[in-house]
Amino acid sequence: MSVSLSPSSASPSFGGLLSETSRQRITVLGATGSVGKSTLDILSRNPECFEVVALVAHSNVEELAAQARRVRAQVAVIARADLHDALKTALAGSGIEAAAGEAAVLEAVERPCDMVVGAIVGAAGLKPTYAALRAGRSLALANKECLVCAGDLFMAQVHATGATLLPVDSEHSAVFQVFERDNADQIEKVVLTASGGPFRQASLEAMASVTPEQALKHPNWDMGSRITIDSATMMNKGFEVIEAFHLFPLTADQLDILVHPQSVIHGMVQYRDGSLLAQLGSPDMRTPIAHCLAWPRRIEVPVERLDLARIASLSFEAPDPVRFPALPLARVAMESGPVATASLNAADEVAVAAFLERRIGFLDIPAAVAAVVERMSAGSSGSVSSIDDVLAVDAQARAFCREWIAGR
Ligand SMILES: NC(=O)C1=CN([C@@H]2O[C@H](COP(=O)(O)OP(=O)(O)OC[C@H]3O[C@@H](n4cnc5c(N)ncnc54)[C@H](OP(=O)(O)O)[C@@H]3O)[C@@H](O)[C@H]2O)C=CC1
Ligand SMILES: CC(=O)[C@@H](O)[C@H](O)COP(=O)(O)O
Ligand SMILES: [Mn+2]
Image (tube, rainbow, N blue to C red; front, side, top):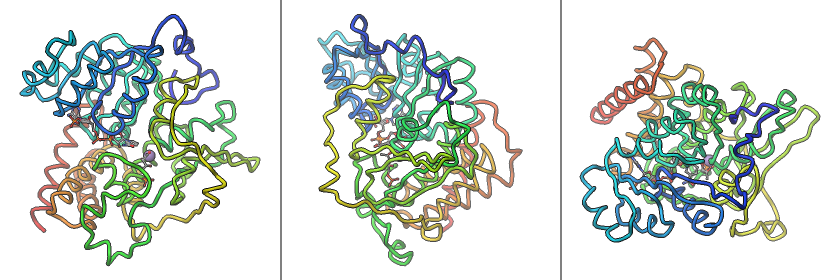
């Protein structure tokens, strides 16, 4: 079963998720990040429902070891091979296995489990997340870059193995929750809401001189630095359109973005009879994460309940493609194909890192990405047929972006 939302979408093996007899076995990729920590919060509050197979991180040994002890994971894996000894020391006496290096990450996702949570940031998540699908695992996907870079390959793998793919991203979780599987052909459009980020009302002139500290102040969500900067440029919303295009059976022009500064409504589906169904919730990722972990059931999550009388009003605006050029850029890349979208992500990763290191300005981020996507698209046949092909595109686009930055 996949997220492609066919009428018979319930997986028999997954239907008993929270059965009294067996706990669901969960592996978390990117356990020490923002989504990873929210996931661990749910897992550790529900030990009767879940047991943890593997936790994977990149370099945060102390947090990884503490998490592994807290949820009594089978194995903790640190992607940086040079940190193996540090992890062994941190786990000494716990009985928890300590592993390190890229091969160990891939080995961890192949260990028997019921669901892998894909919460590594960026293209670094491509191989391990894809390996989880190849092993036939159910996947709760936060790492949207997988679908931006390699959506066709990921969805083909989902269909080939019959794996379950559930969206963690709040807007896609919202859409999934109000998407009537039996009426997929009655949908007019899907609306992804956008906070507009910290510069929603800023002029281009003002945005030219904003600092990383200002850009890292998201109005509603507490997230990792890369996605927070992507929210500020609205590249995040561009990525989310591409993500939705792969997840749901929709055409590009059925995907709308609506700026909604309160981030209370996360996504909506409009049907041909005029009904507009929406999912609302406090801006706390534990709700969409729990939705995946418990699906098709629901579990208790201690997030703040919405007090709509106190909120009193919700507001909406059309997105501005002039001040936020990442929006049209992502759409053009999506129409162009996988070389363009993998380049879009790669260049954005490099440009965001350069902005955070104060080597380029905020508006240079979309400018660099546009230049790289155009250069990559000009010199390519446009097709990719494996994750290695995607990673080759990614490497080339990164090199072009570094060149663009150096030439400024
Ligand atoms: N944060 C949010 O609310 C949301 C996030 N997402 C998506 O979820 C993903 C994670 O975001 P977020 O949690 O904010 O990111 P963070 O930066 O907070 O965390 C990233 C995680 O990935 C790990 N990691 C990085 N590189 C590697 C690698 N090479 N191998 C293994 N692990 C690695 C990090 O480990 P370490 O700590 O050791 O460096 C960390 O655990 C992103 O794709 C983002 O777009 C989607 C919707 C909402
Ligand atoms: C929590 C989540 O899903 C993020 O992707 C969030 O949507 C980012 O906020 P923006 O709406 O500002 O991009
Ligand atoms: Mn989102």
